[in-house]
Length: 83
Image (tube, rainbow, N blue to C red; front, side):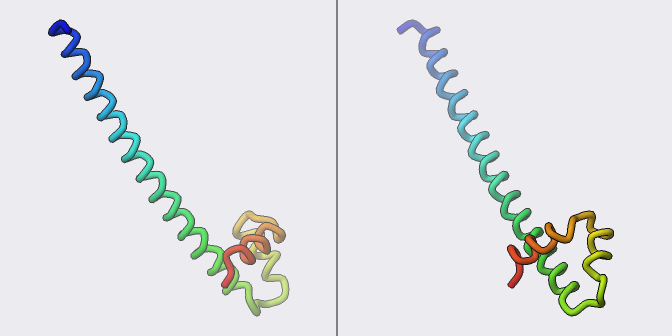
């Protein structure tokens, strides 16, 4: 090969390596973000469930106003994340 061919091959290998490393860092960061989101969701809905358990009559209606979710959504999520 000519010197230009060797330089192009080296540049190609370097490019592929840099892109693979960037993709690996991105994938790792997205996995961490998903893990943190799941933890936050579990904590939030567990707290909502604990707060509403045994609360006064009408607490669910008040919760819908404060949280901005329907009663059905609150029920589904508290069952999903409940203990």
